[in-house]
Amino acid sequence: MTGRKRVAVLASGGGSNLQAVLDHLAALGERRSADVVLVVAGRETAGALERARRAGVATAVASPDSLAAILDRDAIDLVVLAGYLSFVPTAVTERWAGRIINIHPALLPSFGGHGLFGVRVHRAVLAAGARLSGATVHFVDAEYDRGPIIAQWPVPVAEGDTAESLAARVLRVEHLLLPRAVDALARGAVSLAADGRVRGGAAIAPPTAFSLHLPDDATLAADIDALFPA
Image (cartoon, rainbow, N blue to C red; front, side):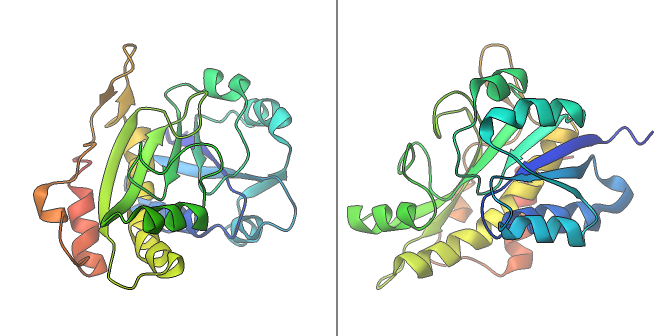
């Protein structure tokens, strides 16, 4: 027995955030606190399923109503929403309360809620004239994008940005923030207390993160690591 948490990732699209989680846990090696053991999508054509198969991870295609039974069957400890577009039933959010998280491509509670996902989020940010966007990892509850926030990281909106160019910049941060939040939750560095407050992690990035330009990947990764100290 490894003692590592068994993680299920729910995804609807190509699975780049899933890949980031897989790569990060692999890089941690024996130091990792979690293993992705299942990837679930709502349709067979989701690219995340092929990424899972290449990594030797079990897959399932399932409707939201069957999620709870599948997660129970595979003895899942933690659930990670990585670009999962379907509403998660209360049977899942209640059963895995404090053990289910999501990544959202904006600084919640702004630009979140029903219908705001993917490129729609970035279009809304630009339409509002916001000069700052970012990524948020939060616990999942019965409402879209309203669960307690674990961590956020800001991303500047550049002059002349399109929804696609802003999305690419935010995705860089998502790929670094989500995997570290998963490992932190698995090792107990982050938890959801009975009073609904998040213990551990840091909901707000340090002042140095609020820059007109994102640093290189190595520097950014080190900065985000500091949110989840060992």
